[in-house]
Amino acid sequence: MTPAVWGGLLGLATAAGLILAAARVAAIRRPPLSIRVLPYVRDVTALQSAPGARPATQASGNPVRAVFGPSVQRAAEMMGRLLGGHESVRRRLERAGLERTVHDFRVEQLLWGLTAFAVAAAYGVLRALADPGSAVASAMLCVSAFACGVVARDQRLSGQVKTRERRILAEFPTIAELLALAVAAGESPVVALDRVVRRSRGELSRDLERLLAAVRTGEPVSAAFDRLAATSGLPLVSRFAQGVAVAVERGTPLADVLHAQAADVREAGRRELIEVAARREVLMMVPVVFLVLPVTVLFAFWPGVVGLSLTTP
Image 1: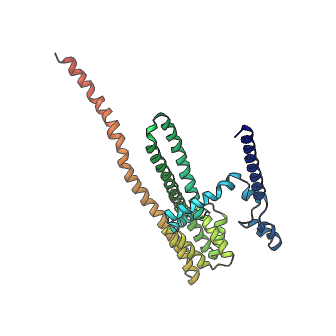
Image 2: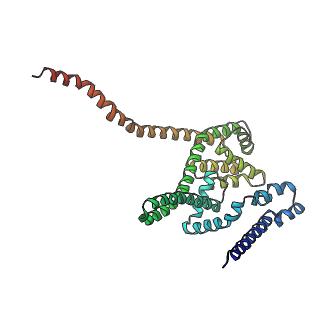
Image 3: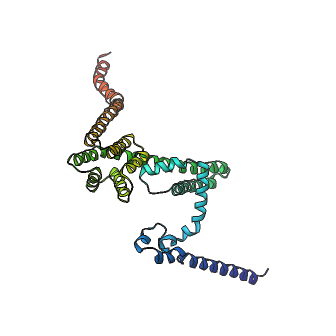
């Protein structure tokens, strides 16, 4: 074929690609039917707060997400089916206080794995330039890096759960004491809860704020606290929620129960601190035995050794 024919074919392919790209961009920027119809059938405030009513610029303004998003979504679904454990991931997301679905977490796992895979692949390419026979080892390294990235995101979620639970345990005695004081002053549990939530900040306060919002929308108080007890991963918070639910249902005294729970938490914190100190005591002996003691022995015996070497014929 002549160069003119090749040039014509390349120009035709380029024009077709530009036309397809322009058509796709126009289709992406066009507002969906739901956004065009919802303003006429729903209140504007409800439309703005609805998760599916985002503007088209926010929903699909990113070309990279528009191009690679469907493929990543399908790969995340496949990885979720292979890994399983959807209920465990959902529970940990709730305990970590993350407003994400299991599918969103699988997408993040996939992205972490692809990032680790890309780093390992770059290293493998550089290594292959110096040693062409290391292709199999580089491929194994890339697969291992992908698996490590997926597992690292899962471990990160577990770490977020533990961090949040430690914060909840740290602020629980104060919240319980404030609730006990408000209830002892004559306020109802719901009013006392509202007062404490408005004057405190923290992870437990956010959970109680969501619980209070559910109560204000019509959910029974006992049912809301029972749900908090079922979803919480801490036995202490579960006992607290169950105690409040029983007190609301049966009218039993709540102040004494809250004071006792706060005292139990503080006592458990003291015991944990003593146990941690006992474990750290052994580690504190390592520099003393292997660093300070040899230097002390050296300073004690070195003058005698030098004196003996000087006096000995």
